[in-house]
Image (cartoon, rainbow, N blue to C red; front, side):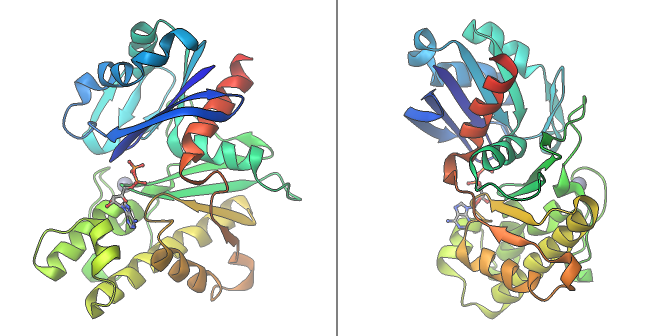
Amino acid sequence: MIIAIDIGGTKISAALMDNNEIIESKKTDSIIHHDLDNLASYVVHLCQDWIEKAHIVAVACTGQVGKHQVNFLSAKQALPLQQQLKAGFGLPVVILNDAAAAAWAEYCLGPKRQDSTLVYITVSTGIGGGIIQNGQLVTASDGFCAHIGHMSVNCPTALSVQCHCGRINCVEAISSGTSIARQASTILKTAVSCKNVFEQHLSHPEITTLLDQCADALVDLIANIKALTGTTVVVLGGSVGGASAFKERVAAKIAKLPMIYQVSLVSPITGEHADLIGAAMYAQTING
Ligand code: ADP
Ligand code: ZN
């Protein structure tokens, strides 16, 4: 059996898996923004009961997942996470970026399509991506690739902002859950979460404008990605990407792009467990 773990900016999910099926699962708050040094022990503790049953640990993790370390861009800190987890679990550990894992799951389990390219975009705490080109997951040894949240896009001057990576107008700094919450809190003059914006404030006219602008920025990114990869399919995941008020805006704006930039926008068929399933499947392909 496989222990699969999904480490996000807001939540950490884990599952005991057998043949890509989830036997048991757990979910807890993420600690990466306030207690990164204890991340490995926190995750090992979460999965303690499953260690004896498993032969491998598969991890989907936010951030720049390189060969030797994970660089958590938003926390400006890096950890030798694979080594730490290997020591903590006493098992082999395979680790890849969370959106890359989700892309792999969708590519392997989704409907068979004519081409062998697929792009997965997650709009969640941040914005991440996974790219499959010619049937292969696009990777880089330092892990900085397919980090499409850090591609800069057009946006109204009022939304223009410096990203935590150092560049101006990265789409993550404009359209992520963190950014939507920040901008909505200014509009509403009270601190709100992104979830709260979608649950309670959708009819507020300035929030409507904000969400339109955030969707525009994401569609600008999607058009760039189409030009780069030629993908015909973009899978839109993450809690914000899955919110119908957001997804419908994005789909409507894609339909207005010039024809060569248009893609089919689909939801992940692996649902909220895309990262866990993809990590487990990827671990099996490279570890047998
Ligand atoms: P992670 O980034 O840990 O993978 P999520 O994909 O759940 O986690 O993204 C978290 C972000 O999504 C937060 O900004 C949160 O407020 C927002 N969010 C959570 N649920 C919803 C929802 N139902 N609709 C819109 N936004 C949501
Ligand atoms: Zn950036």
